[in-house]
Amino acid sequence: MTTNISSGGRAKCELSFTLNGEMRTVRVHPMERLLDVLRQELALTGAKEGCGEGECGSCSVLMDGALVNSCLVPILQAKSANIVTIEGLAAGEQLNCLQEAFLDFGGAQCGICTPGMILAASHLLQRNPQPSIDDIREGLSGNLCRCTGYVQIFEAVARAAHCRART
Amino acid sequence: MRSDPADYELVAPGNLREVVALLAEEPGTWLAIAGGTDVMVQYAAGKLPARKLVSIWNLPELRRIEVIAGEVRIGAGCTYTDLRENETVGREFPLLVNAASWTGGIANQNRGTLGGNIVNASPAADSLPALLAYEAELILVSVRGERRVPYLDFHTDYKKTKLASDELIRDICLSRRFSDYFSYTRKVGARQAQAISKVCIAALGRLDGEKVEDVRIAVGSVAPVPLRLLETERIVQGKAVEPSLLLLAKKIAVAEIRPIDDIRSTMRYRSTVVGNLVAEFLERLGANGRTT
Image 1 (cartoon, helix red, strand yellow):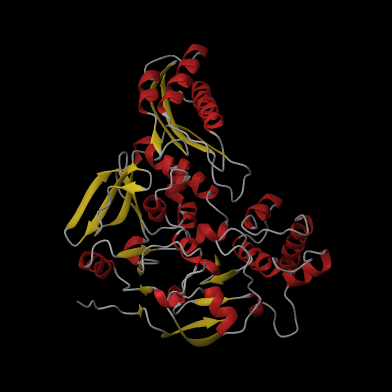
Image 2 (cartoon, rainbow over the protein chains, first blue to last red):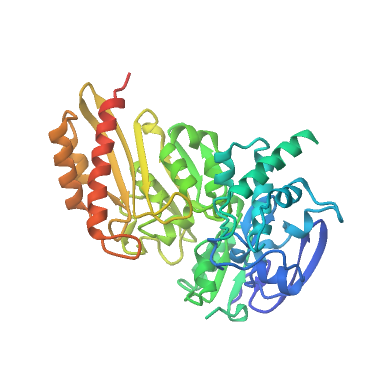
């Protein structure tokens, strides 16, 4: 018996979404993880795989403006979505406020958590342009860093908020 | 061992009617996946028994919050972020909003859903004691129609629920009659962020003069299912909040729970903490819960 299923299935299917402002079409299994499609099909290796179970945040991307762990998103659910990865934040060579602030404050060491941290911070500042230190802590609580001890990261986000407010 | 996506089927019909039709076609075969915060973890670990999945993420019928005279109906597909951002839920259901803010980090709150939390049925889920305290009711839908059931005994045993294999939760209904109750909630875990609870509690109460007029006390992580402490509630009803009552309530509460030793805590620790949390709730109720 068959059901009228508007999309998906078991075999590879074609689906499109907006990625960093450009429409992209991929041919993938519907259950492939967004993270794997980004890294393997689309060669965008900014999003990292840390835990692979939604605890560490190193695979964070923005999906329709919401911060998500791309390791937990089956690609079919990203169909027609607007995806932004770390590669989509800078304008050419021009880094954005957050990226500059992470450089200035030593917010990145080994770099594994950094793309996720910056996207989580970007998501926070979109919703709350003047966050308190507690807001910053909460906004980044799903992103683990084993190098910095977080203080430099929080300082970088606070500076970026300040810099955004002035521009 | 990681799963191979080629072994799985995932479809996204895009509306509730077609989803329930699919569930009815082959009952027990299809697994509904919303934000994936539980299902995708099992999948990544190669431990997902279901091979056919149907996406209910972002279904409009499941992602709405309806405020009517006596109750608030929360669509099962609402995320923790949706709950935190809803003004009525924030004002009238602080236990639920607090639990939502404790659940995972922001990325998981953007994807995890209240219905998913119920169906995943972890006894450690933070939002479930809040639903027990508010005496939630669930509207379940299938091709056979819909039925409304109390959430109180929805969980029948560890990870088992009364949901039939062709049913989905559509709405979680919360009565608005508790909006003037004193509310108390705490999560006790290894750390504040991203930690699964050792014990969590959600409680509501109201005093009549010096005496307890009405209370609801629910706890998580201390039994195979999220548990309402009905006997403790019964014992404290109508009594003045004083040290002897706190001692008695502690004793009854500890007798009602069935905690275990596991990776997160021990039976003994959990029992002690539940007793202390119940006592703390009653103490604060005594200090703050008089209706004006």
